[in-house]
Amino acid sequence: MSVLAQQLVLGLLIGGLYGLAAAGLSLVFGVLKVLNVAHGELIMLGGYGAFWLVALLGLDAFASLALVIPGALLLGVVLYAALFGFVVRADEETRVKNSLLIGFGLALALQALAVRLWTADERSVPTPYGGGVFTVAGLAIPAVRLLSLVLAFALILALELLLTRWRWGQAIRATAEDWEAALLAGIDVRRAYLLAFALGTALAGAAGTLVTVAYSVSPSIGLEWTLKALIVVVLAGLGSVLGTFVGGLVLGVAEAASAAAFGGPYREVVGLVIFVVVLLVRPRGLFGR
Amino acid sequence: MAGGDVTRPRLELADVEAAYGDLRAVLGVSLSIDAGEIVALLGPNGAGKSTLLRTVAGLLRPRAGTIRWDGEDLTRVDAHRIVERGIALVPEGRRLFGGMTVTENLELGAFAPRGRVARAASLDRVFALFPVLAERRRQRVAALSGGQQQMVAVGRALMANPRLLMLDEPSLGIAPQLVQAILEVLLTINATGVGILLVEQNVQAALGLAHRGYVLETGRIVAQGTGAELLRDPHVRRAYLGPLAVRA
Image (cartoon, rainbow over all chains, first blue to last red; front, side, top):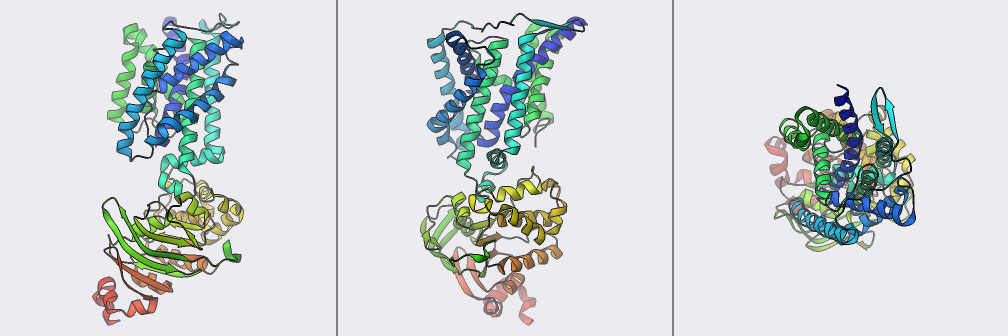
């Protein structure tokens, strides 16, 4: 029993990162109607950003977020200006096709770049408190993973506040609901697209940093994270930031439970089962509008 | 709102051609709306009325012709900047942000600087015109009745502080007693100097309200005149008012 409980706790801890990873994908998909299949590679880049900041500048691993997030925002602006800004000019059908091509191309290019810059080795960042473990009711909780979960939740709350309180956050939500009505309200929807994409990239960068600190990073983690994020987006549905975070926690716990019940190899299967079941039973997701 | 405007903006369309995909084309329409005028645009479904309004609002680029407003050529101006120039459209089907509250919808209407500077006063004004919206300001618009949603749609457009308000079938799908209420509100709005371009299926009501009207059929203007003239026009009576109206 306590082995199962321990597994579930670890699942919950990684689930927060699934939620954060999915929040960025969900934002971009909900607003631009573009599925960015390179989202996982942006997470990977964020991880290496943190790795560099720790290795080269000697920053604290978590403090590197303060530089990774603005850096990723900027990268998002550049990627939108160079690639995705052209995609959103097309009608929605063409948009999906073009965005998949651009996304896969970008993913491959970023993977190759990462191998070149950092080799294919798995990297992690040391923290002074890295080995710390809390014990609560007989359950071991690794300190860095707990801190990662807390920071992920804080970032989700910050996103929720931005989207509800900030003028342009409201404009982003309006554009997601009905871009023509947003135009008629006087909103420059191109700018709303740009902001949403930049925010999505910043969320990916932050998620990558936390993944690298709490776990590890390698050039090939992108696809796995894109898939996890996509499963969470389908599970939670579009339009609810907090719902997406909860969806991440659910996936993390479900994976841990299935690994405990059927063995480690089945960890990855449960997400795909969830994916299919949600699409069949409740296509708009648990919290979708 | 814009009651104290010094300029007297006039909307002028010359030989405007537009199409939504391949359908519902506008084939060379010329018309004008003077400052503070109420103009009705009539015609059967598919005549191009909505296409014309969407073109003026900037959602569609005209394929030919010019749209001038207050002396400026709007033909290549983006839709969100046209709102800033003082032209607001209440689109067909209302197109509200259903997941948001009444207040959020209204405040988004004041997103452009022109609306933002007058936001508080505009909000008071909308709530004075539609008191029921003040009571429901915290409700999601998806929970409102069709008529109340139409009030939000008109209110959202007013929040942009327009000098010309265009409405696409505001009476569609709402209770008859509310139709009259909404049309009467248009008179109140017009009394503050706001011009109105109204597309409406209820021809009798629209012409009773409007100073002038145009009849659009298959993309072309086929008749125009004052409300009274059009109500007497045999073609208009036959086509839009039905056989009963001929006796009246």
